[in-house]
Image (cartoon, rainbow, N blue to C red; front, side, top):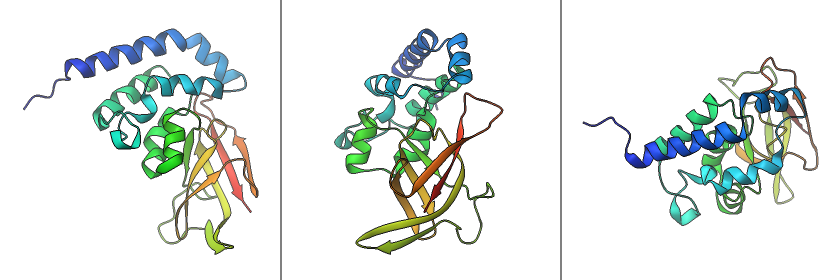
Length: 195
């Protein structure tokens, strides 16, 4: 059994490292962390590299590579302290997306995140405090989610609620959000309330 990376995987790692080193050196990451945060205008560049759709099937507009290639890019992003919503979009939220929402993420038009921790910061073992109720041909969410990663950079929310998993626009009607103070400003967290 061969556990070595293929030449293509090594090339992917090298290109990811080169891009991140040149675009996000430590001084720039510190400047972003101490400033207003990640410029969402830079998100499209990540999509153009194909990083938002590495493990997405080809028929859905992705590169159809796999989890290992996705992990290579995520590892390099973590090593560079990349301050954008790559992990929250690709690893946490994208597996729940499909159709137009997935296409928008693949194209870099939207970034997504997962809102799962309840108001007390935990995932409850029995029943969610965040509720989803059917109304007027759609769904209404009520409740609060905390410690939502990259909330200030991601405009599409995958929300775990009592009754299932739902999509919500971060800036939609009845949605309020704010950043939470964190020790590591390169990993911004937020709180979102649905009313």
